Amino acid sequence: MQDNPHGSPGEAQKEDAGPRGAGGETPHHPGIRGSIAGACALLVCALLVWDVVLTGSFLTSYLACPIWFLVSVVKSAIQRPGWRLALLRIAVPALTLGLVLGNNALQWKIAEANAERIIEACEEFRVATGNYPRKLQDLVPGYLKSVPRAKYCLIYGEFMYWNEEQIPAMLVWCKILPFGSRIYTFADRRWGYLD
Image (cartoon, one colour):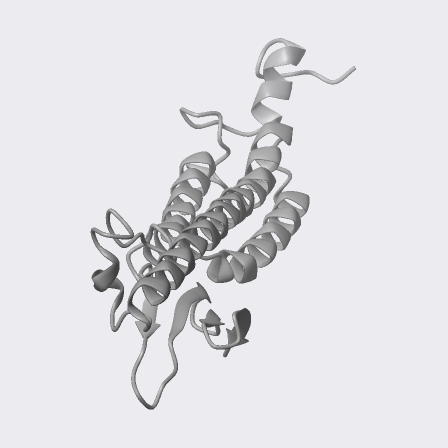
């Protein structure tokens, strides 16, 4: 048995484990929990603001969250921060993507339902007047209380409508910014996709 100049064997083992900070972090990873929480909160806010609030879509999160998830898995495997922190680190991108996709599905349902209301009102207007309205506002208040929004977001949340001599009547809403819009042509009475 070796002599222990530090006192009891338990004290020597505590010293070998290395000094701990206020939060139990080692000097090699000071404030790791705070850094991870701050980074996660910042990224979650950025994705939610862009995808949910601004565009009402999912494209940015759909691209960013899988990469973020893989980075979190690799970092947790290398750093071994403890199962709770590792689980939190891995769960946040998955939950963020789930929230964004859920919002996107809801936005699409709203847009489809509101589009059907507008189409029905335009058809009623045509039956009554012989022509489709020049603009959607012509449907208010006789056929709609107000013109509904396609999606509840800040960018491209409104329906677009054209009825000019050169352009037959059509209704458009932006499904996925910036690439895809749904377009309804009244002459064909069917939906299509516009890139």
